[in-house]
Length: 593
Image 1 (cartoon, one colour):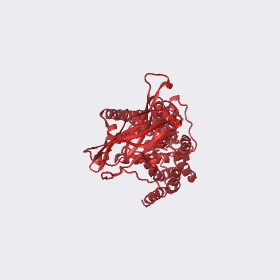
Image 2 (cartoon, one colour):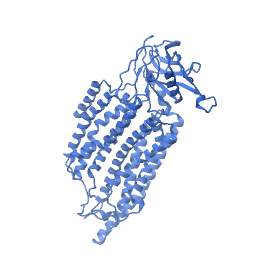
Image 3 (cartoon, one colour):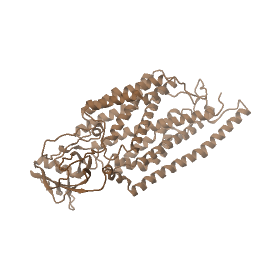
Image 4 (cartoon, one colour):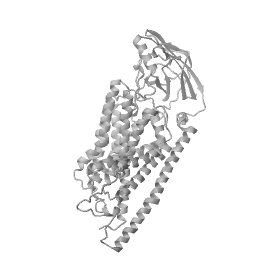
């Protein structure tokens, strides 16, 4: 506990020294007087269908009536691609305005061409007023039934209508609309004088300040959406019940018959030839090849499972409400850093149980098994973002902060966990003695080999979650809002249960076929759901989304590869643990020589 407090304090020091706050506020909670300036920040602009491809607001040739000031941002906000700066519009508390000029600018031919290009790509803008999000499109294209793009007309919206609701001395809600009567024609390549104007209207509301964010949550809680979510839950529960029934009626009955048969054989003829899974009792606990890699995968998977549990706990208590900018990214970074000791302890203790000697290399392998591919992917994608000058490119200071967290928190905790695991000095609990020479595995039919077994193992867990996957993808890679964390938690629990059950079933059939190399098979079968999720990425990208462009495509498939790899490690560790408990149980229940 003292160590945890110390590491948490170190994290806070890093954030302070870097000028990045680890805390995300849940709304400014400011009380205002008439005429007070309420902060309005312009965040970013980007093509509507490419959520990762966003740019700074003033990367486009907008004007400003005053020097642009940047808002100090938290770590999660930077990771989320937020770059808040002061907007050109001034919205004082209870101060109404009618077609007031925010600023004027004469657009050059290059500026006109840039605006025309982004309007054709459906660019939107995002702002925050008193921490409340607002959006709008930059312009529109009039096609008027014409098919030749050179005949289209391009118009820029130069007037915004702000409708703000207040309760006593607090801002409750804000709505922004673009006025179709105020348009600037940008069709031709010529200089244009533009007046950016705005109108402000204030209205009183009875909604309390504490409930001002609820309207964003209600979007994902509409009755027709809830019906689909509950259908997903029922579908998943039916899958679990069918699988559980299968194990209860088939697997347990077969095991019972096996136990009776083996007990009868022992009482009848001691030298009678053994068959089935009892035949390989001298090989089933023979340590596998590449045991250091297996232990590292088990350690990394256990850490990721712990990370997922903590994230769900925070979600259920309301930390990740809509537009709590960067809260999820902050939580992921901090919790992953603080749980690295679990990976080191799990990997080193299991590696030493398998009579491994080079535990230092095992701990290093554990620390790099997930972070290594993630670092390579991030390096490539950050380079792409820098080339595009997008807000997804992390500033150098943020990269230094993350490196310090890894070097001074993650790595020490990983090493300390490894030392604790090495010093545990517990032996591998094998109910049966392992023979000196391994038994030859009989030839297997094609469907009993590793890849077909992985396909069978991954399909059932994936079928239990695929309905919910669409909403998660539409939230992460789109503009939908997802807040039904209770249902998501149930789906995650079902995923874990189904993965454990199906892996145990396949392990039994593998042992019954006298194949004793179950160690790696159970981990691969358990983690195969991650491959199905990545296959779903291909379907979602080409059939359910309108994403396009090299940057968006590379971000989508690059980061989803890392996420699916994380699922592979996490579910693989769950499948292996379940299979290990099962194998120990059945061989403990019979008399082994």
